[in-house]
Structure formats: C-alpha cells, structure tokens
Image (cartoon, rainbow, N blue to C red; front, side):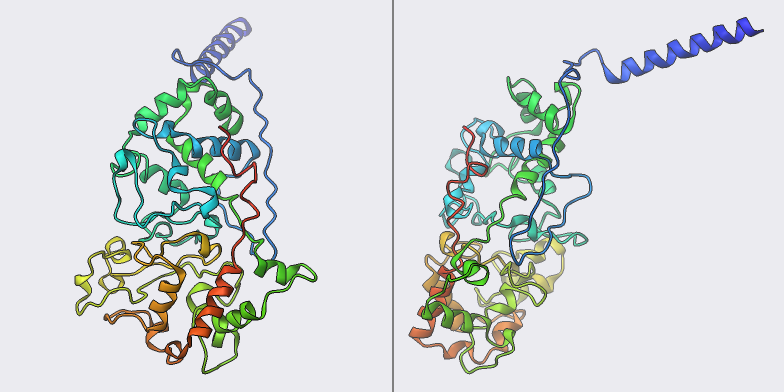
Length: 383
C-alpha cells in the first residue's frame, strides 16, 4: 500500500513540474529569465506647494520603467514608417507641445486640434472620473490614451499594435529593457500594455515648478517685478478674497481653492470662443461628443497655465497666435452661446482692464515659465 502511495505521489510530482515548465517556458519563448529582475522603486518628491500625485494601482513607477518609457517616447519605431515619435508633437523646449496651431502626424497630415502640453500631465488624472485626458477628455488614464490614441490614429502614427509589438520583440535592446522594467520571461511577452505603462511612467515625471513665480514663493530674496505682482493681483482677483474693480477672473478656471500651484482645476468648460444659438451648432462638439450630454457641447479641457508662454498658439484649435490675443479674447467677455462659462457671464470687471492692466497680467503669465528643465538628461532624448 505504501509503495502504491509513493508511486502515485511521484507521478503527481512529475505532472506538476511538467505543467509548470509548460507555463513558464512555452515552445515559442526566447527565454530571458536568467537576466535579473530587480526593479528600483522611484522616489517621488512633489514640487513645493504641489499635492501628492495619484497613480493607478496597477502601474507603480520604477526607475527602469521610466527609462524604458523615455526611450519609447523619443523612438519613431512606434510609427508606421518610423518617421515620427511622441516627441514629434511634444518637444521638450516648448513645454512638450509642437508650436503648431494644429498637430501634424505621419505623411505631414494635419489633425483637427493642437498638441497639448505634457507638463505636470500626471496631475490631470482624477481617479474616479471617466473622462480626463485630451481636449475632449476622451481617455480616462494616460495608459488608455497611449493604447487607444496616437499609435493607430491615421492622422498621427498610423501603425498597428501588432506591428509595434513585433518590432519591439525583435529589437536588439528593448527586450532586456522590458525584462528589467516588467519582469517578462520571454521577449514574445512584450505587449501594448507594457508600452503604455512605461510611457505613462515617464510622462508622470514631467513635473515643472521652478518658475520665477515659484522662486518668489519658496526661495529667499527672489522677487517678482512690480508689473508681475500687479498681474498676479489681477489674476487672482476675488478668488483671493480681494474684490476689486480690476479683476481678470483668471483664477476661477486656472486654479482651485485647495491648491493654486497647478494653475488648473482640471475641468471642462466653454470659454466663449464661438457664438452659437443652438448647442448642436458648434463646429467641434468637444467634451459633449464624448459624454453624450448636449449641455457639454463646445466644452474643452481647461489647461494649466504653467509654461503658457512656451506653448503658443493657444486654444484647442490654435486660433490665437499670442498671449496678447488670448487675453484680449477673455477681456472682451467672449462670444455668446447657451452654455458659455459662468465665469465669463458673471464677471462684470473682466472688461474693465486697461492696456496697462493687460500688460501686467501678461508679465505675470511669463513669470510662470520654467526653462530650467531644458537640459535635463532624464527628460531629453536618449538617442
């Protein structure tokens, strides 16, 4: 009896080991399991005055993941003919925009909207909200935006994920980088989820808060000019608890009460760009086309004003070439439509700004420029 039990136990042991071998080392596996997988946790220190950044639970940031994401961000291998990369539309010295009114993709094709800045992009994520990223909020997370956005968009990279995965699997360097970042055992395991997670990790490190305004707040003996300080007063207005006949009303949409450091409240609104009588008459329905809520037609993401002087032209369609034009739009009171932002329709002081007031306000906006990262090796192209 004992001999039969021993034989059965041995057979079961052999069967289990065989199953494990089949799971961990399939026939088509180019095995990399002998390479060490020991990812280094990335220590994140929020800039002074910033909140802690929220992260998806399934994509913890590591040093190896960030480095892989940086390579992928700058590598044109992601596009159909290897001519453009993420960095083609998001240039480092333009606050990760491209300086164009409308973004251009593969074969010089023009999209219908401008490229958005990636500065402090990780702070645009609101965990439980279904719509967060892009001008119309169509993507919930950075990871979703990378998977469903530029790679297969015919006006951007016009590639297929199957080709991207195959090209990365056959690349001489990437398989080992994916192994170090995500612990894959076979190079054939490289997939779009790994790509999206790596690029997202890199993008969440693109945090900027070293402008003259920041130094004035946190560094001893760094002062803003009288013009910049007057502009700050106009910018904050009654949002700072100081009602005045001179109030640019900016801070209602470009900061929020809990934290003014971001200069964005991460909401969507109609900022009076187009005059329509009917909510379905907007040429671009924006946020409403995504949510299906007609009252949100013509609304677009309220972007951060950090590094705003580097990101011209302005608005979702790049219609304003300069900050002066953008400020003139707002101080005119905007154009009429049924759902124009209440901040414009209930702001009687916004049209009272003089030419000197506007100049001061623009001086303050320039004080939000941080160019200290231009030569940051960890943000620059590795190629």
